[in-house]
Structures are given as structure tokens and as C-alpha cells.
Image (cartoon, rainbow, N blue to C red; front, side, top):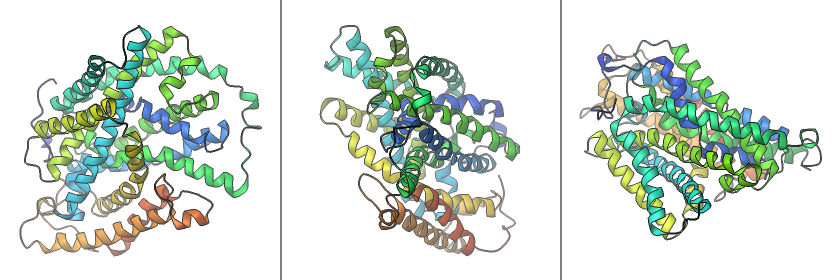
Length: 460
């Protein structure tokens, strides 16, 4: 702890795997208690669903965390981050595309989190009579977000895992207090009636679309979330890894997104931070503001950490901490632009809306490949030598499966920028969050090489 981690996108030797399974829960809880989790839960109410239906959305939409639990087993067995071990199926050159997309997606989430936290800090300054639009105030907001979250990431994995337990306790306590204060304000006996006029296909379409919005979060974790458990000993029970990751992400996320749905039923939550102000006493709102700032830092720390690994996997010749520092600088520039020049939130939001069409099929292929090979990798697949024919043949099949998954996702998706033709035929029902990953995995399972792993293949 509090020493700079020397390992980067390379393999973690068994002797250095000092993470304990009991660290998984607090780590994920601290990372997930943030306003992005709440904001996706708010989406169901504006689509026309009543609160009971929106709460059902929060359960169904969070089920893809099961994929994250499964993927985490692979990261533990390999001791590698996702953007490194996915080379074994996509090929060294082909995987650069996914490493760069992973990095770009991570930057978007870093900026979202930093903007959420910065606006919360500026709101707090305004409440105590300071100029929330001043240059010094805005710079202080950025420093708090990016220096704290980025600083933790620069130190590395051990520091991040250690500090997340404190974030989990503090942020969890505040969130539960706010939820307990606001829940009685809902008119529970009237919520299921009169709010929504949808029925039949329109109701199902709105329900599935809202599920897709909620599912964007667990699906988006597939390209970096497994990285955070790669320091577990390789022989850690697969069922233990799966259950700890799944239940510590699935159940808290139901509560977080459900709170978003509840608060959206009580008022305008287009800005969920400001939207809660009328529902809370001033003292609790101030405490809530501090938790928003802390939640943004807690989520950005592991995101910065993995985005640095993605830059390394894409071929950037920098140390892990150097790549992380570069990523922090780029994120800082984006946040500065948003706070001082022009709001880019719409552009970033549109990118995230399209994210599931890439991340689902991408994960579907390497998840299926990992299961077929029992998470045993050949070093020649991870770092191919010249004339390594087998990885290229496997990569061709992977890209065919990936293309099939992306095509189905594009045909069935609904986003602010694009609506697929099948989505229109189904009355706006978004199925991309389900079909993209499953089709890519299914096609790869049909065409993947049918042979036992080579003798050199090893779980390291």
C-alpha cells in the first residue's frame, strides 16, 4: 500500500498475489456508490413506467452482472487484465482496436464522474456564499476529483483496494440515510395506478428499453472490472469469485438504481444532485453533496487504473503509472473544457448509449473463448511471435463472431443517435443489451477451433 505498483498489463506472478477474497465486496461496493448508478435508475420513469415497473427494471437490468462474475474468474486464472488476455482470441494487432475503445470508454466515464463530483463541489460552494462560477472554484473542483481519484490509481492496486473499504462504509451509510429519508415521501399506495398509460407492446418496449439503460453499467464493466481482482491467487475457488463479484454488484446496484427510480417518481431528476435538494433538509443535503464527491473519486480511481492498462495493451510504451498519469491529464483537459468552455455531456452521453453495441459483442467472444479453453492461455497467444499461424486463425473466427454480434446489436438498439430497423418494427424495444453479447458468444462457440489446448498452454 502507498507504494507505486510496478506491474502493468503483464502477468501477476503467484508470489505477488496478495489480494484476499473478502476484499472483493468492499472494493465493488465503494466503486459502485456513485451518481452514475443512480442516474441510470432514473431513466425508467420518463419512459412512462410507474414506480413498481421501474423497480422491476432495476432487477432485470442488473442481471448482466452475472457476466462480470464469470469474467472475473478468467482474470483471476490468468492474472492479466482484460485488454491483455483478449489478445489470445482477437490477435495482437486486432486487439489494439478494442484496447483503444476500452480506453476511450473509460475516459468518458472518468469525465462523467469528475463532472458529477465537480458540480457537486461547486453547488456546495454556492450554498456557503462563494462564487460557484469563479475560476479558482472550478479549478479546485477539478483538483479534488482528478488528483484524489487519479492519485489513488497512480499508486496502484493495493492502495486502491485498501481505500475502497473506507469509501464503502462512508458512502453506504450516507446513501442509506438519504434513502430512508426520502422513501416515506413516495405515495406507495398510488404509485402503480394512474402514472403510466402504457399497455401491451408499448409497455414491454418501454420496459426493455429501460432495462437496456440500466444494463449499460454492468455491460460496461466487462472491459475493465475483471482487472481489479487479478491479484487474487490463481487457485481461488471459481464459485467463490463468481458469487462474491455477482452478489456484491447485483444487490447494491438494485438498491442504487431503485433509489434513482424512486427519486425520479418524486420530481425532476434530469440533474439527480440538484433534484434531491427539495426532498432533503439542508444538513442532510450537505452530507449528500460530500458523498457525491467521494463517490466520484471512488469510482474514478479503479477506472483510471484500468484505462492506463488499456493504453499499455494498445502499444503505448509507458510504465503503468506513466500511462495512468497521461490518462488523468487527458481527462482533466476534457473536464476543463466542459466547465470553462462548452458542455460536451451530450456527446459523451451519446457515446455511452452506443457503447453496449461494442462492449457486449467484444465481451461475448472472449468470454466464450475463455470458457472453451478453461481460462488457460498460451503465452504465444498473448505475445505472438512472427509466423504464429494459430492465433491468426483464431482471430479470424473471433472477428466473424464479433461482427455478427455487432450487427444484431445495431439492428435492435435504440439510442439518441441511432435506432435500428428491427427496433422500429418492435415499437422501439431495445434488445441490443441482450442479443449482442449472446449472438457473438453463440457464433464463436459454433466456429471456434475444436482441439485441446497445446501442451504449452498454461494458467501461468
